[in-house]
Amino acid sequence: MTTSMSTRRQLVKAAMNAPYLTREEELELATRWRQDKDVAALERLSLAHMRLVIAVASRFRNFGLPMNDLIQEGHVGLLEAAARFEPEREVRFSTYATWWIRASIQDYILRNWSIVRGGTSSTQKALFFNLRRLRAKLSSNRVDLPETELHRQIAEAIGVKTADVDLMNARLSGPDTSLNAPIIDSDGSSADRQDFLISDAPLPDETVSENIDSERQRRWLRSAMNVLTERERKIVSERRLTEEGATLEALGAKMGISKERVRQIENRALEKLREALLKAQPDRLALTR
Image (cartoon, rainbow, N blue to C red; front, side, top):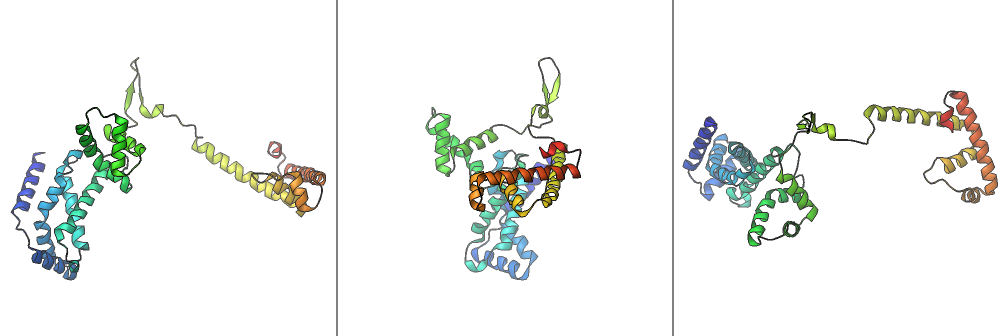
């Protein structure tokens, strides 16, 4: 801890002692780095803007992450800005770099603040970094403001749904909890939190077994269908092998025969399928029913 504080003080001191750059000097250094890959120019440009990195990083110190790490991530953003800066656009490098420094720090916070990945969209990021500020601002104006109304106003200010505000507020209100964390019962016995998570989904081995059986049955059926005539296959397919089976009347009209004749052909075809399946798999009678 002492070493970390000492390192940070040295970094801050070096940044504060670095001379400011004029607009012309920024342009010259950025051009030398972009066109000639002049490392010395990059180092001078980077050092002169470290005070900017520290200033931006300090705005995020309340998220509970080490200040040194925030500064380091901000420096990464500064180097990214130097690599992408286009001197010919006549924009101050500090103005351009501020966005990259802030974006790099925010991305680091989102990746490390919680073991659950959050802030994957622009609206979620806006919520994450502005919820507390807006909540404090609105609460100070109206002490008796109900929670639902508070969240509604925050959602309106940021341009998101109230449900998104509710969810983000719940995430920011409590720390992460391990599923392996023990829970002590009233009788003194303990169990992991994950022991109380019940899933109705089948076990993996059951799912695999069911998939194998289903594929085997489909192969048997495709093979058995070969014993049917073309008209029998058509009737069985449209009556039995589609989600919404065709009616006898509709199928009869389509094929130019009576619905009674469709029924007779279907019954005969099913019997032929049954015999073919029994011949191929005599121990699978249940599958043909």
